[in-house]
Image (cartoon, rainbow, N blue to C red):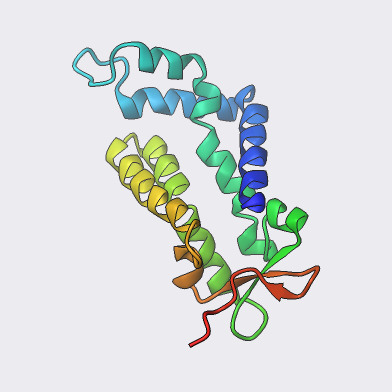
Length: 171
């Protein structure tokens, strides 16, 4: 849980840094297209779009920033939060394969992917489906074996102690 909190804070910090750049402006402009905020027939009326619009360059950049931070798991076997927490992703043969690492990152980041694809294409149902599935994946973190670990056959190991964070059940 600590690793996820660290990654989330780093993602938010990255979004704040990107918000003042053309990247932040790009995602805020794409949100106007996706949510049809300028359309009088849009369902997005009232104070919520105004609030999100005021912070749009940060709010709509968060999914992209989370992809950047947590996506490092697929390349380096761990995210910055896992590195700081001393956790490593391992497979059955002690090292996770590139396919397992990429699959785990894709499943874990499906909510962020959905938002980014929705923003890029202007198709809000893609963002909604991604967010719903992303919430299911995030909720599974509270279980003994999260979906992204169970579906890819990996586990987290405390590399400092050499112990499994989620040991397999004894049957």
